[in-house]
Amino acid sequence: MILLSTRDKSIREDALKSVLLGIARDGGLFVPESFPQISKEKLLGFSDKGYEEISAEVLGMYFDNLGFEEIYDIVKKGYAGFDNGKAAPLKKLKDNEYILELWHGPTLAFKDMALQVMPGLLAAAKRCFGESKKTLILVATSGDTGKAALTGFKDKEGIEIIVFYPDDGVSNMQKLQMDTQEGKNTHVAAILGNFDDAQSGVKEIFADADFRRELSGKGYALSSANSINFGRLIPQTAYYISAYAQLLKTGGISFGEKINIAVPTGNFGNILAAYYAKMMGLPVKKLICASNKNNVLTDFFISGEYKSSRPFYKTSSPSMDILISSNLERLLFEMTGRDEKKVAGWMRALKDKGVYNIDDGTLENVKEHFYAGWSGEKRVFNTIKKVFEESGYLMDPHTAVAQAVYEEYTEKTKDDAKTVAVSTASPYKFCADVLLALEVDIAGRDDFGLIGLLNEKSGAAVPESIKELAQKPILHRLSIQKKDMKKTIKDILKI
Ligand SMILES: *Cc1c(COP(=O)(O)O)cnc(C)c1O
Image (cartoon, rainbow, N blue to C red; front, side, top):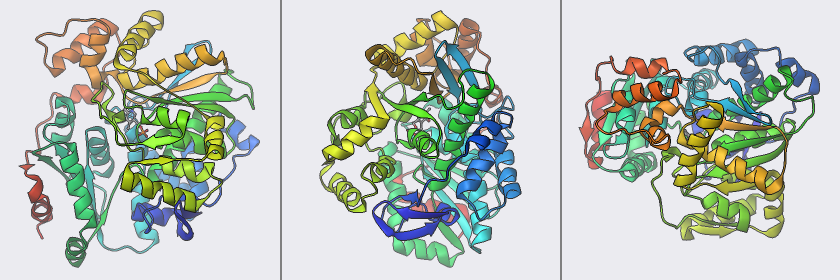
């Protein structure tokens, strides 16, 4: 399938090729020329299929220069390590509400859903387009993405991956997850500084033409794995379609019945994938966009003004602590009726002034599809406790943000449509906050002590990958200054 740039529709690129490129050459994001449609028969048929098959079919609608078998193989290998053999199980919480669990992968967060598949797509793209250079993937991470990318790209041929994390910006558990990473081609470096240092360092390297040329001369092409890559978006679309098929199978809904989808949102990638599923014909009523205290999106959906220059808060849902939601650009492209000039203008204003205002017509379109709300820390903690007491279901703080906003939505609108709320992380990834929400005293416990305590208090099963972590040796100990990033890359590649 052909993709276009959100800022200039004359820039056209094959979908698979876009996985190599990341963003379009004008700085825009790649979007489908048109949305492939899932027929009624196909959707009905999905209720009898396994997750891998559904995902492969959805991917095949976009990456149409690969055969089904080839995609199926990529997907099957990608999800092979998921802990219960089911990549995206749907659980019933109460009468009208279901939870879609997206954290059964190796890093216990939803980023695995895309990052276990995207490396396979990247390898296929290299084969397909005759890219013979080695690919160097650089990642700056605030925690989740780094580990998910490391496991996804581990031992993939022709690829080296280097992850930079801020020494004082990730949790102990996240650090341990990355420092114990196995694989011949995986490299990890702690930067003495915060996330901005790591991120701006990587951005500078990407923008450094001389350094890129030098790498190229040594046989390496730079690439990124961040969430604006089209190769990360489509694997996410698949689980919404799968969720609908699961609801049909269990009789939760009848065919054609519209559902709501509630998503804890940061960079707007996950909820955009749900919107893409809707555009492909999935019967969806409202998309509920849930933010934490960094509620730039809530303000935007209400007023039409996107203002990134505002205070930044650290919350118990750190993966949603974001002020610039990059994937929103793709939604604006659709909501303006694909008006590239408007989109390009707003993105320029955001870059130059930290703010843009959309027109009334576009805002109206947005409101037709989306409801937006946010939840502060206290309500998040109360929600975790209340849901656990009422139904025995234990959720992490990110999921609780979605839950709180969903409850607010039903209260306000009295809408009783069946709703799928997305659970993006295992509660075991955020033990301390979950225990605090349950009002358990955590004094004197280390990270693994907290895991035991949460298990004892909640009865929720401890994921295997966390148990294994306690036994794994530390393999990465590199700690560097930001100014030495380039040198570190050369040392690692031995060039
Ligand atoms: C990344 C992440 C999110 C936010 O997803 P976006 O696609 O950035 O909106 C929510 N929860 C968790 C646990 C995450 O890792």
